[in-house]
Length: 602
Image 1 (cartoon, one colour):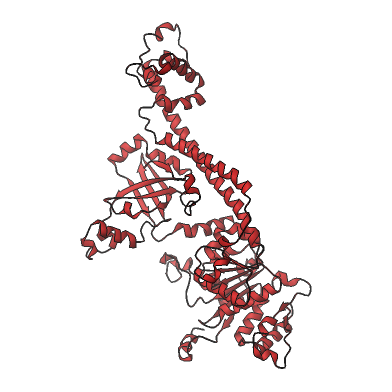
Image 2: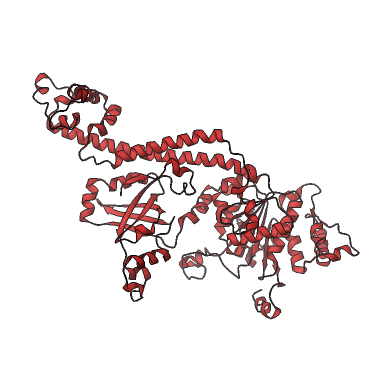
C-alpha cells in the first residue's frame, strides 16, 4: 500500500479538491461473499457471484461509504497498531473485482510513520507468515457528520457558555425559585418590541382599534395587554398570542405544539419582530436542510429579504440567490497568491519525500543517497564525490559498477586505496573494510528512511496549516457578508463546521426549529458567547434525535443513564426543569376528527 499524494495544480480548483488533498494510500481485501453482503445466504443474489451482482450490491450497501470512517488494525512484533482513516475514493469499478480496493487517508499526520513501518521488509516478511491486518468498517458512523460537532465542543470554554443558569444550573432548580429574565438586549433604556406588523396583518385591526401596539419586555402588565390585543386584533389564537409575547420576553423560550399548530409561523413572526427592534443578526438553525429551507421561506413570506443561507444542500429555488456561495464577496487575491504558492511548495516537498519513502532501498543508489549524506555526513560525502569525479568523469564507466556507491560497496578499490593509507581515518570511507561498509550503508539507509518519514510528516502538517490559512482568508470574506445581513440560516451540523464564522458574527439571538430532533450537543455547539436569547421550537413527542446505537438511547435499560437521544428541548420542557413552556394546542391543518386523536398527547 504505497503512500501517494493526490494534490495537483489542476485538481486544486476542482469542486472535490478539499476532500482529495493530502497523502492517501490504497488497501486491498478479498471480495466478501455475496451472502455475507446481503446478510442472507438464501436470497437470489446470494446464489450469484458475478460482476453485475457485485456492482448492484456495492451500489446499494452502506458498507465503506465515501467519507466513512475505517480502522486498520495490525498485530505484529508483539504490538497492536490502529490507524483511523477516512475513505477518500470509493470507486465501484475497483470494488467489484475478486480483490476489492478503496483509497484511504489517515486522520492524523503522525500515523504516516506507522504506515511506513508497515511497508518495511521486516514487517512484510512477518505479515506474509501471519496475516494479521484487518480493515474494520464503522457502517453506522459517518465521521464527517460528527467531527465538526465534536471539535466544536472541544473548543468550547465552559466559562464562556451563555445561559448556563437555565440550561445547566449548578444545583437542581426549585420550581418556586425559577425566574425567567428578559434577554440582556431588552435591558436598554426604553427598549420595546413593535408588534404593529402582526396587528396590521388582520382586517379587524382597521376597525375601531389603534394599530400601535408595543411590548415592553420588562413590564408584566405590558405582556398581558399585548396577549389580549394580539388575540383580539390579529390572526393569532390564544396559545399563539401567549407564546409569541412570552417568548419575546424570555432569555430561554420553549414552544411546543401539535403538527399544524403554527409553530413555524410563530417562529417567523418572532424573527420579524426581533429584526424590527434592530437586534441582529438572528441565527436560524434546523436539524434538516428541508426544515431550514421551509423556515427561511416563511421568513421571505413575512417580508424579510436580508438573509443568507449557508450550506450547499438547498432545494428551494427561492433561496438560491441568498446562498452564501452565490453572493458577491471581496476576496483579497494578494493574500491568497503567496499562500497558494506555499501550498504548491508543500505539495512538491511531499512528492519528493514520498518518492524517497516509496523507493525500494534494498539496493540503494548514489543518486538516492547523496543528498542525505551531503546534509548529514559531509566528510563522507566529499570522499565519495572526489572519487566519483576521478572514476566517472565525462561519462566514463567502471565495468560491473552502476555508480560510485556500487563501486565502493563491492570493495573494488581495496588494492589501490587501502594499501596507500598508513593509518585508519574515521571519515575516509575508502579505508573501511567490507564489513564496515555494509554496516554503515545499512545505518545510512535506515536513518535516511526515518528522516524522510519525518520530513513527510512535517510537509503534510505544513500543507494542512497552509490550507487552514487559505480557508481563514476566505472566511474573512464570508464574515464580512454575514455581518451585513439580519438573518443567517444554517443546519445544526453546519454551525459546528463553520463555528469560527458564527463566533465572529456574534449573533445575539438563536432560534432553533425542530428542536425536539436536535441532539443536546448540537444545540450547545450553536451557542456563542454573544448569545442573549435562545428560542427552541419543536415537539419531542413526534420525533426524538436519531442515534445509531440503541444501547445509548433512553428506551434501552442500559442506555437510560446516557439518554443521548433526549434533546435539550425535551429536558427543558420537563416539569423538573422549572422553566416555562408554551404549548400550541389548536390545530389548523387537520380535520377535527383527526386532530382530536393527537390532543391526548398534550
